[in-house]
Length: 613
Image (cartoon, rainbow, N blue to C red; front, side, top):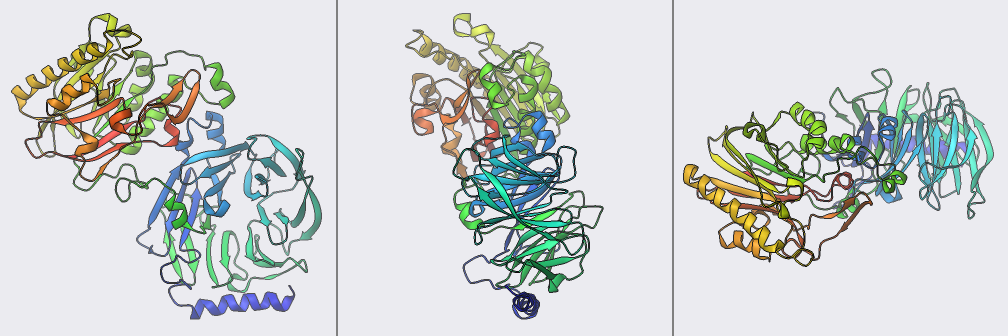
């Protein structure tokens, strides 16, 4: 490309600002380039529908917070990932490469919300995906940084090659030229791949180009033969063929641009610029002109155009209702009560199991309690029921739940049990609670098998409802004869308790917990025959059919279901029922929470119901 071609690009960009109209070149039925953007800063990453957003109404369609990686990343890795400074869509937009100036690089899968790769990268500011599953990372000014590093996705945290680079800020792989371009403080470099098919790949420096002025910051494509480069003083086009720079006409002389995305076909531009110290809370769009505004408390750093959000979204599990995938605290329309339930796996030891050490994960209560508190904080239920809740976990989790406004109703009873019912006193008033330990001990290992009954008045509606939370005996009949009938007896005790509550309050009853038997067994058939309706069947908005059980034990964890059947009726051990809904109470949603970060927390998937009392 010559200087005349560069000038043509710049003039075309200026012209389209005036003639393309408000659709920015969008074709009917298909999202145009830049209609969806990825924005990041601090610990948060957003996907925004830029085309539908206005200055006063930001349309967030997907949100991810670093805390979701807890359990996959160690506390130290979480610390190093806390300040996102780039969020580059790669692999056709299915994954996002996140760099943190605090010192970490992550590869995030949008559909599963799972971390696929991590590496300690001091003051990392930019990364890109190279052929063969390799990742190049540019690190800025840090005693262990000032470098260009190469990684393999299959080997997290292992740097396979390194070169010095002062104030590394930009990395871009050009498939057209089969070259890697890297931006530093005062230079742009071009590298080729070397020994790429071997186990010891590297990069070979071919050319170094001096920037028009210092402070290289943004590096992104302009078209196949040109790159966008920004520095302290302005925005430039770099012609790959001639190795020359020229001002980028639409933004000539604009200083401190932190990120810029340009589509030469339409002249559309999306960018961020430092407005408060090094950050902003605005995204600026040209062609059409638009400003997107985030919360002033959010320190937004970079924005990236997302190639094909609709294709990515098609691979995601649909949310139970619109908006829930963005904000898990959002409830189905009409909901005035949310009950959250989970067996949290009792592991009281103060040592990390040997099998967990290579994973870099901590399954002790001190670490897992943070994940459980996050689930409650994210979903904001009114009632929380737990099983396998030991006094050891209580020491770690209770203060976190109290800080979120929850009280353990079992403290009113005065006796310890492993099946507590927590409640938000702003939403409900506790009327009565009773803790019931199952006997004999033959079918209640270490006194962990019990049920708790609690009666509440809902403050907003005045309606009374009961919650019965249980953990039944666990051994299969073949391993311990009498186990099936023991579970049946334990359920009959609960049903008797429910009858007494109905006699006193004549209220709706919710019964849930880990019952260690499937729906088509004698214990559960008692409930079905007694008029108890599974909430996943009663739900009028969304009834989740997922199984809800997987491996998580001292030997490790897995996302693969360990249940025998393909659906809830034939495979689930965790159950949730509604009974005696004579007042018109309605289950709107039954949801089995399968977020990846929950996998190392417990062998059960948490579940909840949204109810209209």
